[in-house]
Length: 130
Image (cartoon, rainbow, N blue to C red; front, side):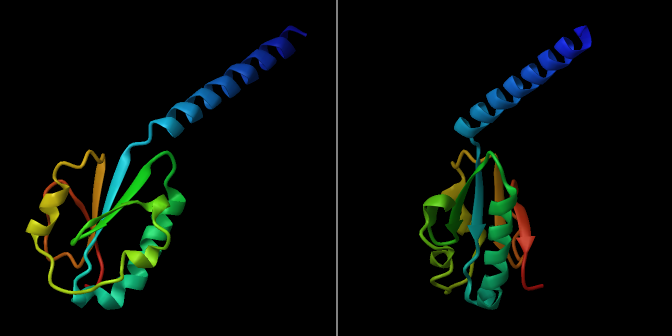
């Protein structure tokens, strides 16, 4: 009987700890910034980039994904009506100067989806097209 009470106490404490952690992490989600290089040369890879973003969204828990392009910040991925909005324009060529608008972003992780032609400091670069 004593063993059953100890086991029940262990289960209750485990459930309470899980619920508390879940509640805290759901309310305090750090930002992950994903910037997409929408250069014309990468247009054939937009489908692969969208699939990569879908995978990130499906596999990320307790983090808020913020999306932008080399042209503009689009916002929270959940609030974008369609991911095709990310890829609606393809022109120009991306440079490190395009990323300056994101320097003050409080994201805990910054990910650049690009062709690998630039390797900005503090960014994880996911390469497409090479």
